[in-house]
Length: 212
Image 1 (cartoon, rainbow, N blue to C red):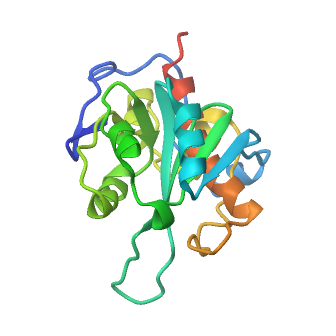
Image 2 (image 1 turned 90 degrees about the vertical axis):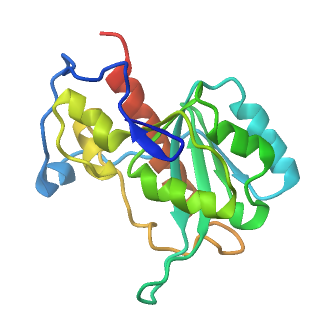
């Protein structure tokens, strides 16, 4: 599926047909535990200033596929949801963590999120994009939600942890999910966690769509 103008649309590249690659429909927690734990081992750029922002945008320029995710500082009050703190964009060897609680969503980043020629792939994108558009109005384009996309390959699971296990054959940790994403400094564990989530989305989409 592709999100365009905030709505879901079928990806015409594989709409209406099952792909020939065989993947299991689902996977159990016990099966996931048996897999090796992996994480992103490439370069991580924490974007929290104009200088680091310019570096990150320059490093991402030319990319046609990016893994995408966001993080939000957890709220422990019923019915309250905080604004998005972080946007993660990852290619194969680099992940950029945009601390939008500090820098907002500048024009060039908004343009990237609106560019239909750059695939941004992630999981459960509707709420992420809705939350980002509260911070900065933009017209989302080029987003592929893996939750719908994987169904073309016979996969019924939808969470990123299960999808990484089914498609990539390894497990990832979610231990840093409920941490303070607006801390003065992001810990190394937070940086690796955030980069890994976006990188795994990149790798899942790349593997599913690579030529047989």
